[in-house]
Length: 91
Image 1 (cartoon, rainbow, N blue to C red):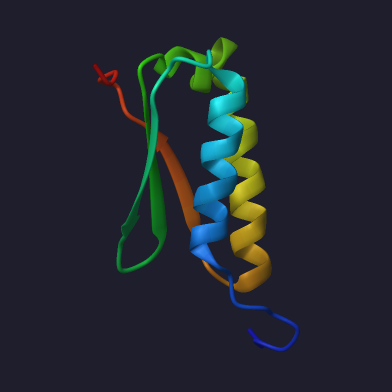
Image 2 (cartoon, rainbow, N blue to C red; image 1 turned 60 degrees about the horizontal axis):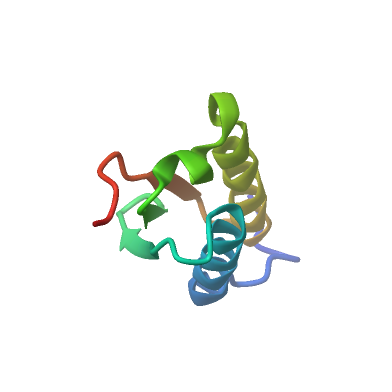
């Protein structure tokens, strides 16, 4: 596959976007942490929150939408990106 037309992706911008989106989904006093884990094949963002259910959404629809957005951002740059929401809430 040709790299022509692909622009490099700034993972810090993706992380900032995920933090902003997660904060909008939760209460103002909830803690949100978005960590980047670089794996050999892809970059994985782990979202930790005091209320992980708010980020996941009903039947997982909210986190699915976030995954689609970052996956398309990565695809445009030729880079695979994933999201996981930590099961353990922040204390």
